[in-house]
Image (cartoon, rainbow, N blue to C red; front, side, top):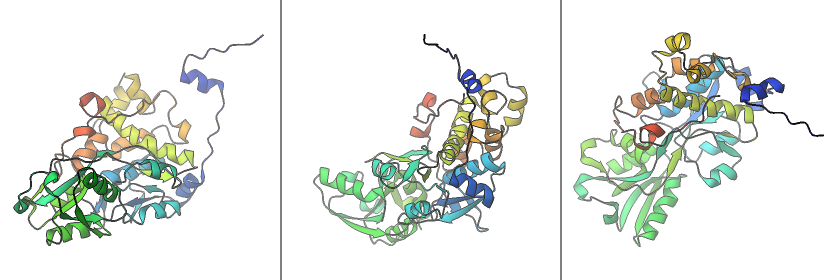
Length: 340
């Protein structure tokens, strides 16, 4: 006669079975080293850029800081490796870095043929175009025969080819290794237009000699979900990176901020908040982390809204609207699975 076991909740399931968390090679190495090695862009305002003292900041850097806060209780325990688009995947595959958090688009090829896994999306973007106002162009459809400054080794090149081919237009590509080089060439008049992810265009625009003399055109020609990347085959590390990002998104949805997280941990009656902050539920055991792992992220890095606004939003020089990056219940598509 078959026995049927009814388990009414994940808590009951966890209580029934003994689960041993075994640290993977990356997690072991990071713990032994004492810091997270983070691969970022060579310098894109709002995403990853150093100040005059060599301190890096940006929405991509915050992902790495969140992982360090979750693992070590200290968001400062990261070191940055600046990488060009051509270098980034090799650096991750070889083990030179632990996380690639470098405005990198999640695609089928990258997710299945490079030995890598995308751990989530920290910025929903799309490819656009920037031109000088003096060119007198109001739409990308008017750029037939134009020359374009492009960063090599990116999805930008294929997207541009597809767009011009489908619209029966011609163009001349001029490629460069870094985004800074593309912007400098555009500024110097070496090309008619610059194409990249639209967020990057806004970041590059403020670095031009005359930012007001350039305009970002309205067309978006691609989907560019940008997010952190890790090596395949190390699920423990993958889970920590993924849920560090998801903790920031859940914190915004629940109204938990760097300013009120201590008070919420002490006084909130909301079970969702209590699970997030390690007061109830599975806590940190499923990832081999301390129970206050998410509390440390929120306290030291902030929730997703705080990171977005200070780096690329209204509190930054870029002043990018939330758009698709608003939460799912605020008109956007940012969405994190629940912590329970």
